[in-house]
Length: 154
Ligand code: HEM
Image (cartoon, rainbow, N blue to C red; front, side, top):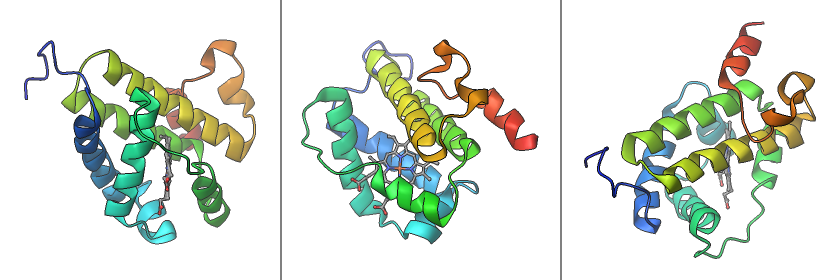
């Protein structure tokens, strides 16, 4: 597929299914966040893909019916092993790389921004407000990866 073609945006469920399979294949294999899926939750990739494709189809196109509680599984994970800012930063990094590797356009941008926004919201709800991350008004909706990497070395 030509990454620079004008019509290369995410156009519907079929595109999302490809993006999400690639993303979760990478996420499951990732040294930092993979164990949350493979060791802690024992996630079945195929079951997760069908649910998460509904979630993203709903988020981006409003065409699927997704009514499950997306917060609860992350709260359960966090109770078993803390989900840190660095973990969410890695999730966002993989998400951006996957979307950018396959698509280009307004919906691809929206997918990346939505992923970041949800990552930040999940992190904030699990960990409570972090002054280092939330000090500035304009930091809302964005997980500053550079800051997360610095924090992980601190
Ligand atoms: C480090 C970050 C994250 C980790 C390790 C993680 C891991 C997981 C795991 C293990 C599950 C449960 C899967 C299962 O076994 O059923 C789950 C569910 C889910 N995750 Fe995440 N997640 C992360 C961040 C995010 C973000 C940023 C989003 C935003 C799109 C997201 C969206 C979801 C949704 C919608 C579900 C529920 C799927 C369902 O309906 O069952 N996750 N996540």
